[in-house]
Length: 303
Ligand code: DON
Image (cartoon, rainbow, N blue to C red; front, side, top):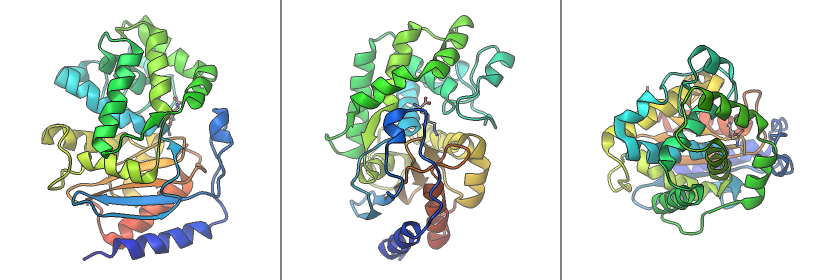
């Protein structure tokens, strides 16, 4: 039996001792103020066992990890018709790139780059007001985590609104190609707020259990949908570093610029890691290193 707690203890010690911790996201001021010395990791099993190390109970902004939850809702709402709106190919580009939209008639490559996530939020909203969509999203995440104490950080959402001109450009570009069904500013408002969901590693690891398909895990979607979301996380979850994450870790993962990564070990467990310093591609530097150490120690790579 894998001794998950001693593996986490070892990783926690190695990460505390690491000097180069990356750079915290600068473009959203509340994220720029987060202390880069922090590191937390949690591993949740469907039978209720939970292992953790470091700052695993500290809340952080889950940012783009929320795209996994919104995709789950959009697929629940539209089924396979969703794929006429958003592609499912890796982009090989930065998370906020506009380049491919121009060449590809405003249809985003996948649901995890910003353009694709904005289109996914639009699909998940259907024709409801942003506040109704956000209430449903928060309820969904709470149900997945089995924890009611999960909220949107209003200050972070406000700051995203204030600094979101590039996201606005992506959204208006898609709208000019008739890719959005709701008013653009409403879609953006919903998107900025979903990114501002605040969770701990423990909460996030528990919420990810629905994606493991492990016996006893919450069943909030069909097995086919779950495996496809995992496939997208593997191929697109780290933007232009998705290949590198698959190579080093071999597990589906989704990162956020808040420094969190949600990792799924299919049939086994759900893992959340957080350290706010980012690497050049905008993914948690220590989070990625910890995920690599964890996958090596457990042998849980899917390959
Ligand atoms: O849209 C943005 O720029 C942020 N709210 C989220 C981006 C993000 O987390 C990208 N992840 N690495």
